[in-house]
Length: 106
Image (cartoon, rainbow, N blue to C red; front, side, top):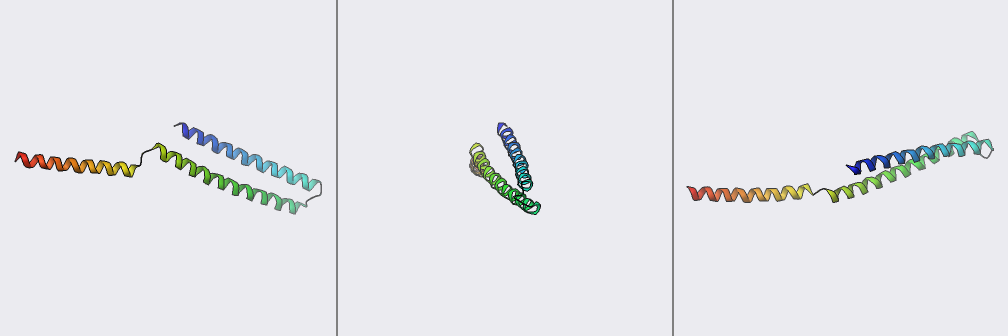
């Protein structure tokens, strides 16, 4: 299914962005430490805070994507409960018809 491929590409792109963000945050931290604007301890805290924020954003993005995918998929596949209900009603109707025909032939 084409949707599956799109989802995989989206996930991989998200992981790539996460990786780039982590690299960039480390570069910024290293530069600030080298310039003396942050101590190593402050730099570690800065990096940790940045990565926590990225994790929060990734989690939010994942929830949003999951919600959107579920909404899209519900449009493409029929409601199985409704289909089963309709089939059950048809089977009941056919069973009544068979019973009527059986009584007439006796």
